[in-house]
Image 1 (spheres, rainbow, N blue to C red):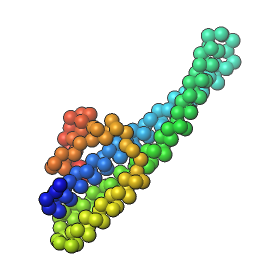
Image 2 (image 1 turned 90 degrees about the vertical axis):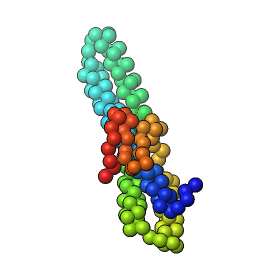
Image 3 (image 1 turned 180 degrees about the vertical axis):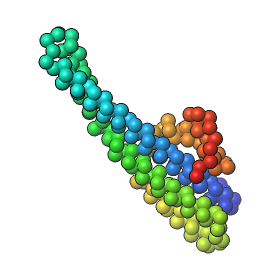
Image 4 (image 1 turned 60 degrees about the vertical axis):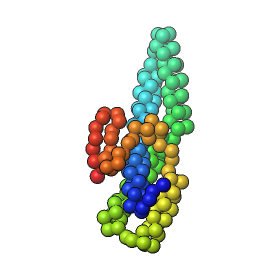
Amino acid sequence: MKSNPSELLEDWLRRVKKAQIAYTRSATYLEKQHYWLGTSIIILSTLTAAFLFSTDFWIKAASSVMSIVAAILAFLQTFFRLSERAEKCRIAGVKDGELRMEIEQKMVFQPQGEELERYAESVLSRWNRIREEAPTAPQNIWDKTVVNKKGRFIDCTKGENSPIE
């Protein structure tokens, strides 16, 4: 439990930064997956069509297998709704970024007393709404997103340490 409002805001700021980074990275990851599946489907479908009129048995057999794989990939692309999830993650990242900037501003021009309490309640309420609307970020991305106590993002995939701007 935090002993004063400043500590509470600092803790929330770190957590909002982590959410912003995780959702932004999730959006990029999901978008890449969507394009990878789409490109694979196009390539397999094109090869299947090109080999359709071949008289060689093995080419026809390979064409049949490629057709089945393309259908499975199309199913996965539709079932996982990667582009829709990427857009929801992007929106959640933007909303977290807006909330982060507002918290940073309030930490500089820190209100006192009841005004600070009302502000904290307002932040908590909006943050809860963002969480309710946001999809779940992939666990591997969430686990690799670390914001230290100084507000610096630590990229666990590369070992880099960079400030969040």
